Image 1: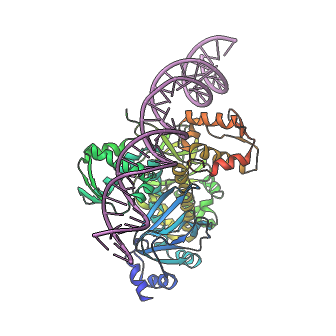
Image 2 (image 1 turned 60 degrees about the horizontal axis):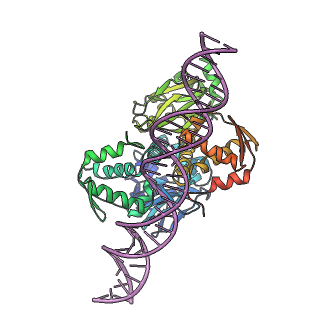
Image 3 (image 1 turned 90 degrees about the horizontal axis):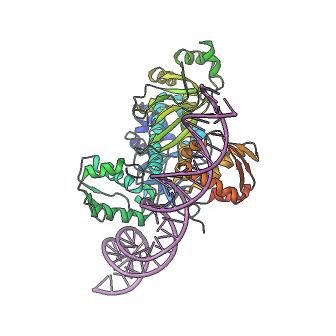
Length: 228
Length: 228
DNA sequence: ACATCCCTTTGACTGATGTCAAAGTCCTTT
DNA sequence: AAAGGACTTTGACATCAGTCAAAGGGATGT
């Protein structure tokens, strides 16, 4: 299990722990691999534990009876998911599927719970993690309810570009998945990208998008429903 | 501060604590009162601590530049809010206003944080609390993205009626506020209530609503966008 | 190179929901 | 009881975004 312990160091959930705790963690963590598209759990499944992504990407999403999906979160390496059911004892609140070939660490509920009980640092990290997610969800709710799709897209593009102040961004998900992340469908996303191009706010070719007018995008991103 | 300690017993966040801990909590908790409509904090304000509602009701919400509001949560007695900023150290992620005359307990960030560090039971309660909220938010995201307004309203009515299996429910918020909770506006809500009446699914008079056809409402509540 | 599949784009159309405006209702205050 | 104001309802309208259908593009494997 030495390889597992090695992975733990880079995970924010486990930052600031003592060496002894890494060993405890690596004793209870189980490595699992999933192929692209493979399901990790479904909404309502009994929550037997939670997961940390080591490699790949895991999609957490809700799906309607008619088949439309809303992505809640795309988890990359170092991020955790499924924590909620550890603490509420209820089933998983959403579906999880590997969006790429992925490796994850699984921590069984009971063992992890008792570990947390013993370690205030781990508990605080976990609370920070849950809080960040809560903040992100609040932002998503705000966007879905108070912004139109162009606003959500603009915000996302600025987010991608903002990290490095970069002018050119590469979408790291397919446009269909981006649509599901923004709470819309591929056709609508496609039309809005075309419109932003026409307005000279961006120049997109495939997954590459150059931001031509940051100010303009920011204006759209801040807009609520209906302009005055 | 004896009165404060007395309140603590009924709060799930603090359930299962020892007597000594109640005393610690009541030492750091400060009682505050707000009049109806009074603002408790604004989005972006520095998060100096978190709150527990003793009496009244506190509205947590986001507001768009055009003034439309989306209610994230209505906190009643025993519920807490503002926890997120305790753990992320960032500003509050939403606005909080007293929806009714309200009394709350305020726990300063640093003092509470150190208390949590010492008490695993308190930490676990807090994680459960955060998890429940996360689950609720995930449900709200699902509703906003994947259901139309009639679906959200039907679900809400069933939720109100479901508690006691009651046939007659009383709205405990104004219709304007209910609209903000469901992610729509009063006019749309009004029209959909009228439609449900016409369809003989409910019989509403003012804030009183009798559920005539539970099955029918359930069908609408489960529907995603667009019926087949 | 070719065929195939899947993702993306475009067009025509529909429907749900927001906007604006005005009438109606209820409750509180004087 | 009357008056005022806030909340609610209704109507006419605009528009965003989803549906359905089909064409276009790009990647992969044979």
